[in-house]
Amino acid sequence: MKIAITRINSVTHRMACTRNDGSSDSADLETRSVLLHDLVHYAVEAEAHLEEGFWGLVASGRSLASLDPKSGIAPTGDIVLAESLVGPMQSVFHDRLPVENYVTLASRRASFVDRCFVDAVLTRVRSLWGHWKGTPFHDTMLLHWPPDSWGAR
Image 1 (cartoon, rainbow, N blue to C red):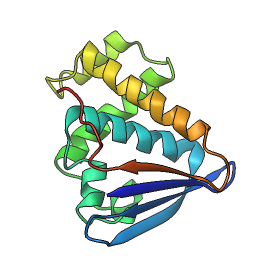
Image 2: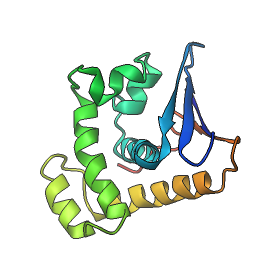
Image 3: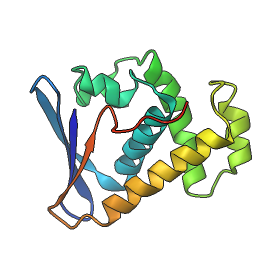
Image 4: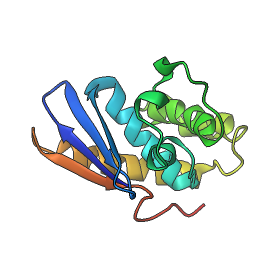
Protein backbone atom coordinates (compact mmCIF):
# COMPACT_ATOMS: atom_id res chain seq x y z
CA MET A 1 0.00 0.00 0.00
CA LYS A 2 1.20 3.48 -0.80
CA ILE A 3 0.71 6.04 1.97
CA ALA A 4 0.83 9.66 0.79
CA ILE A 5 0.88 12.28 3.53
CA THR A 6 0.46 15.78 2.13
CA ARG A 7 1.20 18.90 4.15
CA ILE A 8 -1.83 21.09 3.41
CA ASN A 9 -1.04 23.90 5.84
CA SER A 10 0.41 24.34 9.33
CA VAL A 11 -2.51 22.57 11.02
CA THR A 12 -3.84 20.03 8.49
CA HIS A 13 -2.47 17.15 6.46
CA ARG A 14 -4.10 14.73 4.06
CA MET A 15 -3.58 11.01 4.52
CA ALA A 16 -4.21 9.14 1.26
CA CYS A 17 -3.76 5.38 1.12
CA THR A 18 -3.77 3.45 -2.16
CA ARG A 19 -3.98 -0.27 -1.56
CA ASN A 20 -2.30 -2.90 -3.71
CA ASP A 21 -5.71 -3.84 -5.18
CA GLY A 22 -6.15 -0.24 -6.43
CA SER A 23 -8.77 0.79 -3.87
CA SER A 24 -8.07 3.90 -1.85
CA ASP A 25 -9.10 5.93 1.15
CA SER A 26 -8.17 9.38 2.36
CA ALA A 27 -8.86 11.82 5.14
CA ASP A 28 -7.87 15.37 6.02
CA LEU A 29 -6.54 15.27 9.56
CA GLU A 30 -5.39 17.64 12.26
CA THR A 31 -1.61 17.45 12.24
CA ARG A 32 -0.64 18.45 15.77
CA SER A 33 -2.13 15.46 17.58
CA VAL A 34 -2.72 12.89 14.83
CA LEU A 35 0.34 12.78 12.61
CA LEU A 36 2.98 11.83 15.15
CA HIS A 37 0.63 9.19 16.55
CA ASP A 38 0.20 7.67 13.08
CA LEU A 39 3.96 7.76 12.41
CA VAL A 40 4.67 6.09 15.75
CA HIS A 41 2.11 3.42 14.76
CA TYR A 42 4.09 2.91 11.57
CA ALA A 43 7.38 2.56 13.45
CA VAL A 44 6.04 0.32 16.23
CA GLU A 45 4.13 -1.93 13.84
CA ALA A 46 7.11 -2.20 11.48
CA GLU A 47 9.57 -3.04 14.25
CA ALA A 48 7.14 -5.45 15.96
CA HIS A 49 6.02 -7.08 12.69
CA LEU A 50 2.38 -6.35 13.53
CA GLU A 51 0.76 -7.20 10.22
CA GLU A 52 -2.76 -6.50 11.50
CA GLY A 53 -2.11 -3.26 13.35
CA PHE A 54 -3.46 0.08 12.12
CA TRP A 55 -1.50 0.12 8.86
CA GLY A 56 -2.08 -3.55 8.10
CA LEU A 57 -5.81 -3.15 8.60
CA VAL A 58 -5.92 -0.15 6.26
CA ALA A 59 -3.89 -2.12 3.71
CA SER A 60 -6.36 -5.01 3.95
CA GLY A 61 -9.35 -2.76 3.22
CA ARG A 62 -10.49 -1.19 6.48
CA SER A 63 -11.37 2.47 6.14
CA LEU A 64 -9.46 5.15 7.99
CA ALA A 65 -12.78 6.31 9.50
CA SER A 66 -13.56 2.84 10.88
CA LEU A 67 -10.23 2.83 12.74
CA ASP A 68 -10.87 6.18 14.41
CA PRO A 69 -11.66 5.60 18.11
CA LYS A 70 -14.71 7.85 17.65
CA SER A 71 -16.18 5.31 15.20
CA GLY A 72 -17.52 3.20 18.07
CA ILE A 73 -16.06 0.03 16.55
CA ALA A 74 -14.25 -1.94 19.24
CA PRO A 75 -10.67 -2.74 18.23
CA THR A 76 -9.34 -6.30 18.42
CA GLY A 77 -6.09 -8.16 17.80
CA ASP A 78 -2.82 -6.52 16.81
CA ILE A 79 -4.27 -3.02 16.83
CA VAL A 80 -5.06 -3.32 20.55
CA LEU A 81 -1.44 -4.28 21.22
CA ALA A 82 -0.22 -1.51 18.90
CA GLU A 83 -2.28 1.14 20.70
CA SER A 84 -0.94 -0.02 24.06
CA LEU A 85 2.62 0.43 22.77
CA VAL A 86 2.17 3.59 20.68
CA GLY A 87 0.79 6.05 23.25
CA PRO A 88 3.58 5.55 25.78
CA MET A 89 6.17 5.46 22.96
CA GLN A 90 5.11 8.99 22.04
CA SER A 91 5.98 9.98 25.60
CA VAL A 92 9.39 8.34 25.22
CA PHE A 93 9.91 10.21 21.93
CA HIS A 94 9.12 13.51 23.70
CA ASP A 95 11.43 12.62 26.63
CA ARG A 96 8.48 12.54 29.05
CA LEU A 97 8.87 8.85 29.88
CA PRO A 98 12.23 7.18 30.53
CA VAL A 99 13.04 4.28 28.21
CA GLU A 100 13.54 1.95 31.18
CA ASN A 101 10.02 2.69 32.44
CA TYR A 102 8.58 2.07 28.98
CA VAL A 103 10.38 -1.27 28.71
CA THR A 104 9.15 -2.32 32.15
CA LEU A 105 5.53 -1.45 31.35
CA ALA A 106 5.39 -2.51 27.70
CA SER A 107 7.22 -5.82 28.13
CA ARG A 108 4.29 -6.96 30.28
CA ARG A 109 2.10 -6.68 27.17
CA ALA A 110 4.62 -7.89 24.62
CA SER A 111 7.63 -10.04 25.47
CA PHE A 112 9.61 -8.71 22.48
CA VAL A 113 9.78 -5.20 23.97
CA ASP A 114 13.31 -4.52 25.16
CA ARG A 115 15.84 -1.70 24.88
CA CYS A 116 16.80 -2.76 21.34
CA PHE A 117 13.17 -2.64 20.23
CA VAL A 118 12.72 0.85 21.71
CA ASP A 119 15.94 2.08 20.10
CA ALA A 120 14.85 0.72 16.71
CA VAL A 121 11.40 2.32 17.00
CA LEU A 122 12.87 5.66 18.05
CA THR A 123 15.36 5.59 15.17
CA ARG A 124 12.52 4.94 12.72
CA VAL A 125 10.28 7.62 14.28
CA ARG A 126 13.07 10.20 14.19
CA SER A 127 13.67 9.42 10.53
CA LEU A 128 9.96 9.69 9.69
CA TRP A 129 9.54 12.88 11.73
CA GLY A 130 12.60 14.44 10.11
CA HIS A 131 11.24 13.52 6.68
CA TRP A 132 7.93 15.18 7.58
CA LYS A 133 9.59 18.30 8.96
CA GLY A 134 11.48 18.61 5.67
CA THR A 135 8.32 18.25 3.58
CA PRO A 136 7.28 21.67 2.21
CA PHE A 137 3.66 22.83 2.24
CA HIS A 138 1.61 21.16 -0.51
CA ASP A 139 4.28 18.47 -0.97
CA THR A 140 3.87 14.83 -0.08
CA MET A 141 5.77 12.37 2.06
CA LEU A 142 5.48 8.82 0.68
CA LEU A 143 5.59 5.62 2.71
CA HIS A 144 4.77 2.01 1.89
CA TRP A 145 3.07 -0.71 3.89
CA PRO A 146 4.34 -3.21 4.48
CA PRO A 147 7.50 -1.22 5.03
CA ASP A 148 10.49 -1.64 2.75
CA SER A 149 12.29 -3.12 5.75
CA TRP A 150 10.78 -4.84 8.77
CA GLY A 151 12.44 -4.59 12.15
CA ALA A 152 14.78 -7.25 13.49
CA ARG A 153 12.22 -8.86 15.81
